[in-house]
Image (cartoon, rainbow, N blue to C red):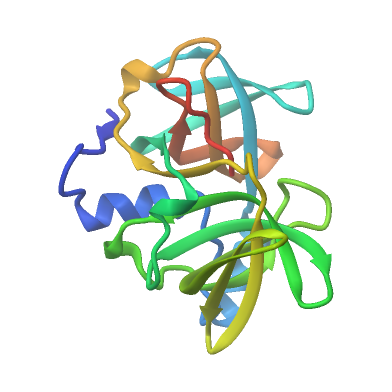
Length: 218
């Protein structure tokens, strides 16, 4: 049976489960853990629209075209996203930003997720991401937010490293939001972080679904 994000006062453990949809392994994960994960399973990001859903599985029409059937593991959770804006990002906030190189020393945001304070530091780092070619997922704390002639620019810090990321007008910016199993309807847009097992089977404990016209951008 699915659990639901509460609208206010999100439990930290449940927030962590949903947030890990977009957060890769922390930089401190040891080599043995990484090798074991690579050997036994592979994380696969499934993006698309729901074809059908049962108590045990969900079928998604992927953005690449084929259908993907994902088994829902025991204790699976569902959450959503809510629209936010550049003005909601404040110094000290923890964010996840998909970005691509723009110029020397500066990247351009593809999408931004603003995480609640309870998740600050989770999965901190900068790693390859598969939303767009040559894109990275940067999970970091906002050190400064300024506007310049090129648009909005965030200076973020992770593990003592600074990175400047511009956020062009029209870039999707979201926060985590409430959702429930009832929101998993045919045609709804979802983002699923799945594990590939033996025989290319897929399973997940986490689904992010679009609600109220806001779709998961990650």
